[in-house]
Length: 283
Image (cartoon, rainbow, N blue to C red; front, side):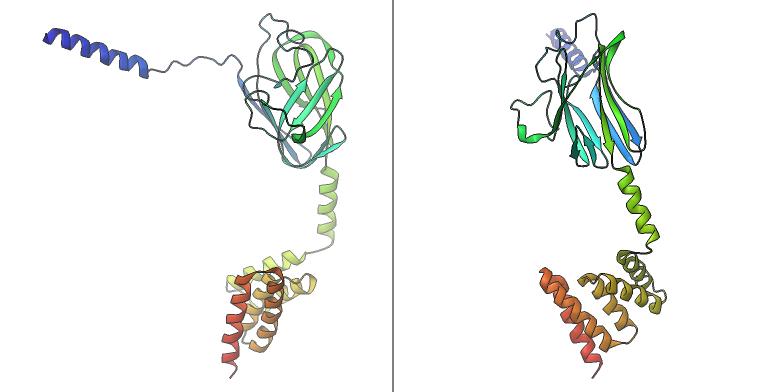
């Protein structure tokens, strides 16, 4: 009886060992992540790469006229760090699922705002189409064994995204906002510091215990250019620290008034408390 029990215990332990073992094997459609900087925009593509394996792909494994996940496994996701233009339509910065409808003479390309799908959505929502357009496929003189997505023809303001598998190649242009971003940057730099620059510098000087006169000059300049309740609050605090309580009260009153207009109760309360405190010091 003891022998039988020992044998069963040994088999059970062996079974647990086998059950807990993990066998690693290559994925049939390996995952791929491509990031390409074009101009000032980062374009990232995350997709899986199935292989031909002696199959007819388009018109066979991937039927003509049906929505395709454009790869394998989870749907392909394309992320833009800056706004772009595709198919004559503006796309905001962010992530999009890339779907396609392969046809013999034309492909439909769709950038879809819902990226959380395994394959194609169970229920297609046309309202989630950020852009849909058509492009013509090309026949390659060689076979592309593993599905691939490429970003090429790199220029500061544009690039091309290409999809290739078997003997089919499809590409389309992506327009970037590089010129707009650079032009704004140039205009800003040539125009000198902004109100926010003066505010950041003045607040840093005040909070770091540096020159109060310089901190006040920068904060006052910021509020001359663009008065905001939080900026005026900082200017009032500097004035109070300089012992100029009458001026601090006037500035705090302005900050309080703008805070009330904005519905900001915290700044309204802080200014009220400071005004009371500074008036007491003037008696």
